[in-house]
Length: 246
View 1 (spheres, rainbow, N blue to C red):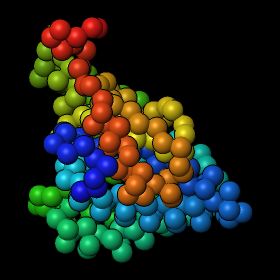
View 2: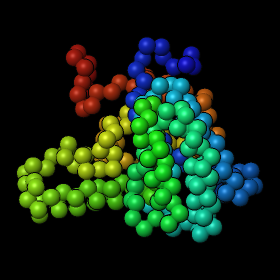
View 3: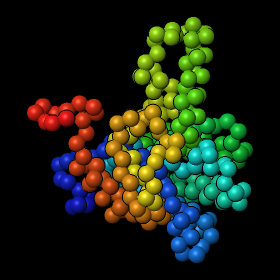
View 4: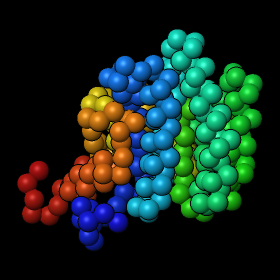
């Protein structure tokens, strides 16, 4: 592990990354946006390898938001092509590395050639016990919360639960991320400082690290620096340490 990480300090169990800046990376180099997305896939591979090496248990990557469908058709098609290529080329390697692939996001009305590929990735790796790789695809946090609320409303209607039964744990258990702990650390690249409809419920006590580099340039050194920033934080979850000022 890199020496720039604090020895003996805690590592985050769950790191989530908003992978931003592929288009700007390409524009700076006079390239088409698709070139930035292709380079971004290489950064995804690096991030997964680094997460395994750093012994991070859960890695969530915001790959395609529910709002991204509004982008130009040519760009959406290029992104779908890269997703299919990634699964076909990388799934076997992820399986060999004992990575379990999980997909969160709305599954309804996906392109006919995408849904089965996502299911294939989950089924093939379902028994793996290493890194839990969580891909947020066609994902939006507000949509996720709405779906959870509808689920609870249906249970109330059916008499399975009462209104007074609903608490934070129950809502969390109806979200796409029910099986995973909330992220300890959320990283966003490209200098932007917002969540962009990503894990808004789950981020209640996450630490945030915003890095200036565009996603295709997010390498091992950038990952290490983000982890070092996290390690230096004092996580109190709304409380204070005895004898400390609030």
